[in-house]
View 1: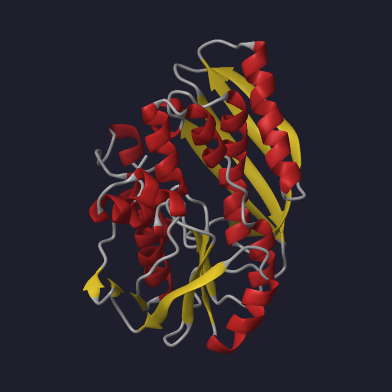
View 2 (view 1 turned 180 degrees about the horizontal axis):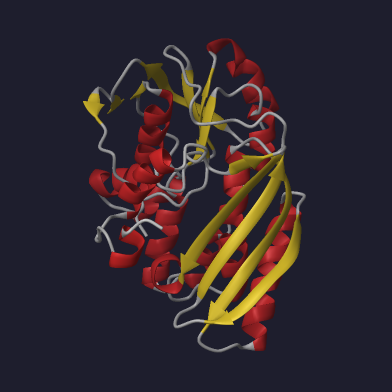
Length: 300
């Protein structure tokens, strides 16, 4: 046994710092999901204090928790198979548990998968750990982008930032609607075999681009206008706040991918959701409108 596991070792590391080190410690890690004999497997943990604003319904919590893991399945270009969840809370309320399960079942059904149950446990705060499984023989990794290719994103950016602002304002009905995103598994299967690199935007567009750049040893030149959600302009009054919501906030669970130029027309035709070209793969650096784009995004 490593002595550091007994004596404590280094402390105070951020989540992103640990993930960078784990990429070297676990060479097979580093993508949105693990790949094992044609299956992709991913797991996530969400907490009340960091992931579920006051006013989030149990149904939305179930949908969003399981949807977050299904989004990782989508980023691998895999067909969704099943999901499970471990539900922890200080006490159990029947209506809360069944509301959560209903949301989990419905998000799975929306993408053609099955919610297969899970576990219950007491915990000091409402906490959910979810696992999703998908199937593909041709997973899309983060490491295949090449200079000259197009960089694209599905859907719109900033939806979750708007939702959080609405939760803060007490407009919980619309906020819950926005929080229940549909995992882009259908788009992921269209992009499978076409996209050269792919990631979901749970950490925000900026951080996702940096993660792809690190994995593919490349850069990105991104240009405005970006496909920002229309509600950003209605919710945030200044350009700085709008940029923060659309580029850095994260939790949108869209797909960010690189696609050869020649494949763009067919991808746009076949993709079940809008897909927007936002820039071009370059040799190095990540820029937005010619200026360096910081590696900053959602942090738990």
